[in-house]
Length: 445
Length: 111
Image (cartoon, rainbow over all chains, first blue to last red; front, side, top):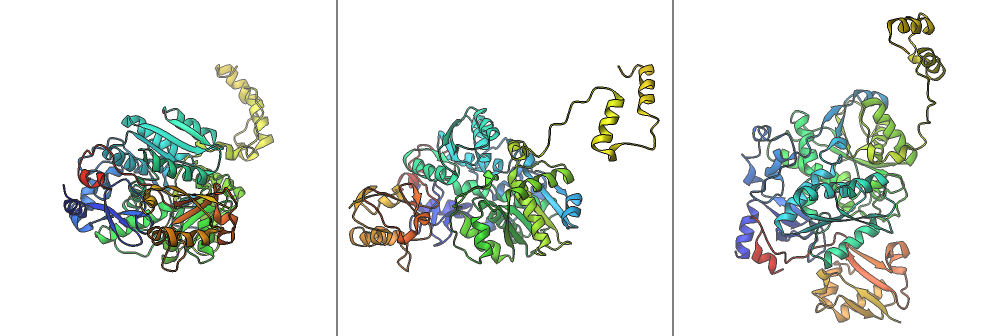
């Protein structure tokens, strides 16, 4: 096939194009422009899918991200079999009441399949392309969630996986990678060191690094968060989206998804404001936004929100620019607030999120308090990971309760001593009398 | 005084395939001036219209981001290893098999 026919084939579907200079690259495992070294992005010919990407065609699809396959960069004929995504969008009345919003929703990727984070979305797209490009080994640099997802999905596809993580990663995330049989390499450094090493490895080894040479395809998977939000709101866009930021990719891709839906007429045009959330201990993008700058000054991360601890975010400049263009803002919160955010979300909505979700929840509260998010506006908070992976962040938050003897009287005394609000005083014959009755009935020992 | 400069494959096309070479440059500005003299195509690739290093390139000195060391003001020392890496790096072609369209094997082999 000639290069001319490649151009033809690609322009009818999708191809890589430079964000800065607009040069086209067809489809290949490459993430930066040869000429200006800017990131490459997948561009679609939207007209070619008009009429095929409709509310009806989507509704007829499976209840997972593949219902949006017409606007995902997957090779023709690819048959996905993992039901990734389509996570709940839940109305968060109780959290909203606590932090001052009457119209709050949580997009809950803490329950994304198969590894309980939004990374399952991007990895499924990346690995589809890794196979098509002929890579036998896949890898990634990761702060944890990506490692889990690459390991799990590579095992199902029969691909070898080599995954590099910072040495101090949470134990649960390390275990959740090793269990799938992946080669996990702990690097003595932070994520930015790991990422730099991966770029050097990708230069020398013929591997498919999902967030290096497969990055343009990988990143497109994040759009599915945006498609789902719009569809789950009844094919309308929210007023505000609050999104955690690590590398700065997800927030931009949600915007891209909304723009595509508007362009294809699936939703009414609407000015959506995008708000970015970071931990103060690693806040290069929120700092840039707050200072009105697009340039990112790298930081040395120091935060418990390790899944957001990217001090030199690849998509940071683009994210900062986009946030400001939408009239949104970015904020950051301390580690203490991160833990409080985790607890608030759990106590009000029954959603246990990891530290990144604590960041997003706490930043949402801050933005509402600042008046940047109106209380009656429809606001979607993106929760991207599961709290079971970062339980160490809550160490010391709950003291070990003493063991209570299996006697009603003991239980009753314990409750009065610890939480009298739970005691049903009005119906109380004495606890001792109740216990006596239970003994007679054979119900207590 | 001499420092060892390392380039990624994507930039080595401007240096006759040399990925590492020695430099007498005393700082980043000096290194860019040296590119002008020795590898004009490389200089054109890594510098923007104002003559500054493009924003998509990171520079590391002995594994430390030069921005943490003072940027342009940082003075190299003898034996330093200076590495240029695109901030979003990676891209290696020549894979062996392609399952389906729209990927074009011929073009990929040629890049």
